[in-house]
Image (cartoon, rainbow, N blue to C red; front, side, top):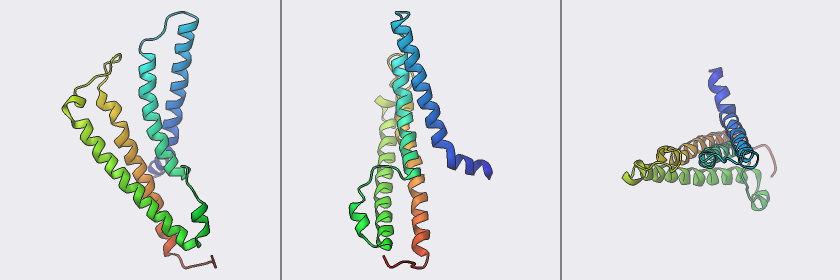
Length: 164
């Protein structure tokens, strides 16, 4: 159970940090190879792109976990505390609906014959691995949104405390 809690608390952060460090090292190594040894890595740019795409989707999920995506709060701040929670719940439902549609559409795209058989130009890796970052990232994001919805639901079930 402790392992599951650790994964829940740290998975995206640790994986994203590792991927970002790998991107920095790969780009630095490619720059050194290009400008010092005059021999650029042909596969470096493509691998950087692949790792960056996976990094972004993990970072999106981590942003949902920390609730640190950009939000416009001026209208929310004018509402009473209880209505703010209902608004948060509504927004989370809309985000969750979007993520479910995104997952379904991405899975359909990956299954198309012309996508399923494609390979990357330099590394010859299957393109569905790259495209899988979107539904996997959206699934992780959905889990985080559901966790926040559960927290909001708990707050809504508590007795009303304030005057706001």
